[in-house]
Structures are given as structure tokens and as C-alpha cells.
Length: 210
Length: 311
Image 1 (cartoon, rainbow over the protein chains, first blue to last red):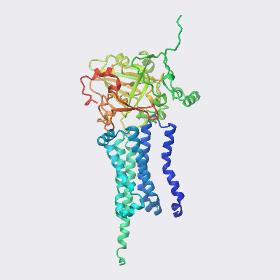
Image 2 (cartoon, chains in turn blue, green):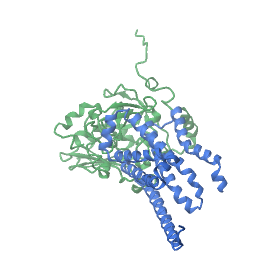
Image 3 (cartoon, chains in turn brown, yellow):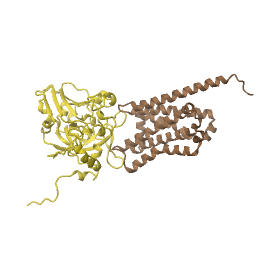
Image 4 (cartoon, rainbow over the protein chains, first blue to last red):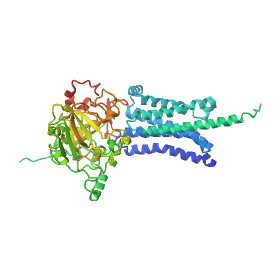
């Protein structure tokens, strides 16, 4: 199993899988196969994949512990970057097709509509994470500080769920489903952290090597 | 001798791109399946005849039939706009009765045949503006709503008209699944309901309405947001007080009783200043929304009303 996770092919395959929804969307745009309301369809598709990738990214840490597959960490950066990629295409769809690059109108919406305010906040919080996702930046910041910075993704995920919840017309089940997934992922994290702490304190009596 | 050099009537094939007027594949499938389908069930639409042209019609290009019949808000048959076309397929619309009651001299129950004979059919090509920010241009077939309402002789106490949609939990979603209360109800002030633009539509594109568009008949109120144009009506009640309306009960800040198209009053989640006219170009075209959806002949109904407060 370890060999499978570490194979370059596995990573390449996963990359292709992550890109597939985007390629499918491009294909549908090319074919003109976009339902009666193309802008709405593209906006919803890119938005759906953003929140999905946020959840998948957040699932890596607990999955490593639960499945006892620590090698999964290899994929976390790529998955997070895909979440950012879909978020950017979601934003671009809105700014381009919906707002026609009208900055004034865009700003109006950001200030006036709370679901857009929170969505923009989520996107902006992701930008520093994407920039500092490289090994070089981990070194430059030091692992502790880097880790602290990257905890911003919790707020992005929460912003994504609230963004979705505030925009739906009547059926709040889909955003609530993501809220539930997020809650489970956070609880799993907490459980893993508590377990680690317990293990650490159990080791404490052993005197440190000076 | 008069030699006619051209046919006077504009055909649908003239205003709609060839191939989209009728989705050929769907047409063939329907034609092949027709003998297998029990009468009354999944009835294909029927051609309507004797239709005259209404002067109220717009000259804008009509949206393709395929879009009009596959992109619908009809929560009884699903909250997704692609759902009603599938889930309403077997909707039973015959036999059908509508009852007119309340503050009237002659309460009445009419069946579909009687309703169809009330007035000559007109084609009314109207702009259709959804509160969600998109719009269609739809060639409806119907007649003035007033032709129906006058049948029962409303009394002076009849200040409002309340409409109710058919609801059958066996064929439709539950209120819990759809997240709005059923049966769907709507209402108009009586002068709005009697306005010549208020239309009772029984068909679209020269055929009877398909179920997902509100068969067997529905309102078409082109100066109001689409949700006011209640579908599949079974009850019409004349009342003294303003009746409750479904979307207003659900979210009052977003959906007012009047719901006149108004670029100056925002929806909580979006501006209403512009709309996307679907079916134009690859992504639809963004156009400015007009007050009363461009139907200024209704302005007189609202001279005493603050439209910002009574949205």
C-alpha cells in the first residue's frame, strides 16, 4: 500500500481526476451543453467543486490517522491547490460572466450581500495558503508558523458553508450536508489531537537527552 | 384579382432557430411512444386552433421551446429547474375542474371544456422575468383572465382574488421535501386581476401546456415576477382582505405580495437592475430590467402605492 501511495503514477492519476470536472465543464461550454441558464450552471458547477475540494483537503489529516495511512499527506497540497483553483474559477465566472468585469458593481455586491461578503472572505483567506504551499515557504516560515497560517483553511471551509447556506432560496439541505461533513472532520481532528496529546504525556516521564 | 405574394402570418420557424423550435429527437420519441401511452396519462400536448394575434405581443425573439419546457420552477415537481420536465411527465390533468367562490353572485365550477369556450384564444408573446434574475420571451396562448372572473359576478366586497394550485401528495413532493408550503397559493388585487394584460394561459407555442409549464392552465402576469403566475389552478376565491401568498410566507423580505418587476428594488441576494435573457448567445445576454417589465400600461394600477414599500 505504501508503495502505491508513493508512486508517481498515483499522484499523476489523482491530478487527472481532480482536473476532470474542469475539463468536463470546458467540454460542455465548447458543446454549448449548459442547460437553459449557462451562467448559473457554470457558477454552480465551479462552486460545488470548490466546497467539495475543501472538504476532501480537510479529510486528509483525519484519514491518515483513521486509516493508518500517513503517506496520504503527499496529496494534501495538490488537493488544497485544486480547491483554490476551483474557487478562482468560481470567482472568475461571477466577475466575468455575471458582472462583466465591472469592478464597481462587484464591490457593490461584496458590500451589500452578506453571502458574497463571506464568499469573498473565504477566497481571500485561501490566497496566502496557495502562495505559501511550497516546501520553500515551509522552511522560510518555520513549520510551526506555517502550520498556524494554514489553519486558515478551517475558516475558508466555514465561510464556504455559510456562503452556500445564505444563498439558497428554500432548500437548505445541501449546505447543511456540507456543514455536517465539516463538523465531522473537525471532530475527528480534535479526537486525533487529544489522542496525540495523551500519547505525548505518556512519554513525558522518560528524561530528555541533553 | 388579388395575388397573395406572401403568407401573412409569421411562423415560429421564422423567429426561432431551426432545430430548436421542436427538439426533433424528443418529437420522434413522443410520436413513437404515443400509441403505448394510456389516454389521460402522459398526454402529449395538443395543437390549438383558431388563435388570433394579440396586440400586446412583443416583437422580441421568442426563447426556444426546448428551454421554455425544460427549465422550470415548479416546486411541486422538484426544486431543481431541470426536475419538473421529468417528474411532471405523468401528471394527470384530465379530468380537471376549477371552482370559483367567495364574494360572488354566482359561484361556479367549470371543467376544462367549459373554460376553453369562455373567450377566443389569443397568442400573447410576453417577456417573462423570473425573480432570480433571468428572463425568457414566451408565446403563450390564452385569453384575458377577466373573461373567467366575470362569469361569477364578483360583489363589491371582492377586493382581492386568491388562487390555489392543485396539490396531490401522491404525484407531487411533500412540503417538507420542497421547503415551501403546499398547496401553492397566490393572490391579486381585483383591479390587477381584471387588467387586460392579466392572462389565463392554456397553451404555449401553439400547443396545450405541457405539465411542467402549469397544465392545464395557469396565470401569466407579464409585469410581475414569474412566481406570481400560479400554475395548475383548481380554486379561485374572491375575498375582502389581502390573501396569503406562498413565497411571501416563506421569505417576506424577498418576495412581496405585489412582486411587480422593479429594477429599483433589490432582492436580498442580488440586484434586480439587470437580467440575463436566456437563449441569446452562448451565455445569454445581460439586459437592463425595466419597471413593470416594460408593460407600462399597468402603471395606473399603482399610482397610490409606494413601490419601494409594496415590493
